[in-house]
Image (cartoon, rainbow, N blue to C red; front, side, top):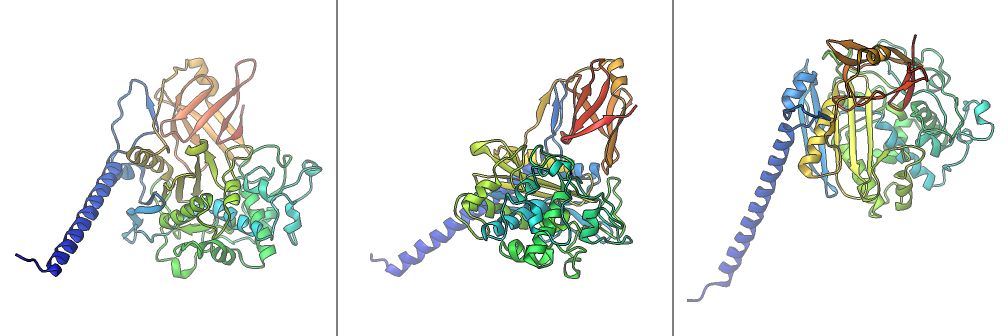
Length: 486
């Protein structure tokens, strides 16, 4: 019996369609299972030897930490594999987080500013190693005894080695006057931060400086002769398809229905929803995890020589090369060689965010939250995602608890201070706690030795400094030195 050839063709086509449907359905099922595993097996940072720790459920953890909402984007093999929102962008409005919900990225603003800067360096507008004052108009970085032979440069500013002051910025509530950029740089009212100036020799040490990025903002505006949000949109955001991102401060009206409300550590919403940050280069970006994923993918492709929309392969290599400490030109770097990660976090009032990406592989994660407590769950999730995908991001660390005697505890208890920041070490019910004066709750500290303590969520590593008489005289935390007050 002869079979019409068109019947054979139709059946073959149907088989292909069914095969494609099955493959797609199986892939979706596998992805759904991955997401379920991640959501139900959040992993702690610190596992104390001898203690049993149960995996954490995401919904329970959000409730425990009073986190209203968060959003995740996962990149796999150079593509965004999934994006998902959880909880509320606004509890008061009962408005759920979705893919287009915009969060304040805070200090994640910096590496995107650095990317724009490197783009213009390759266009011949700037040089990485020229005195930054060559690019500044009607304000200059003050010359001090520290700048006699060395100067602040673009390279040093982007790697936080320019010797410039001002760690970060508090932002401005709706009822507060917004200072001009020059007022911020000079530390003049209504600015709520001190003047930006060199107080160490440029190029000598690493010290994180939002003030340095504010100087960079001024240089970009002065040389490109455009408002900062405009030049960032034209240079980076529009080219990368980041359509739900903006450096406008205050946030433009067209985006406000998409903007998340920020929440304090006690779970209460910020008055008038969020603060304004005129320090745009350092802290002004509003964006989404999926938009930040597009930035990450472009950096990965540039490093592989597959994209030159913004920077070349050689410039991407410079961007992701460590300088004096952990920072490249914009991102923070971790690990080495084939396992190299580029990372940046952000902390504005009411918002916490983090991205982690493999430099030499097309994988990465972006997590954004609208809570001052966000970092705890962000790292829980990063460990869970890393575990499920088999990536070299974050894993729980096992520690053996060191028992401090009463005399050692009495030497540690007290107030520790540095300019504009302080914290207290207190003892309650036999446990030690670090109580910061910045917008974070007190955290239990576990002693690893007489000199080192770490919190259970792995966010605070405290290195105690002793004098020859075994008296505690200070501590290092976040890379900064604090003096113990008498």
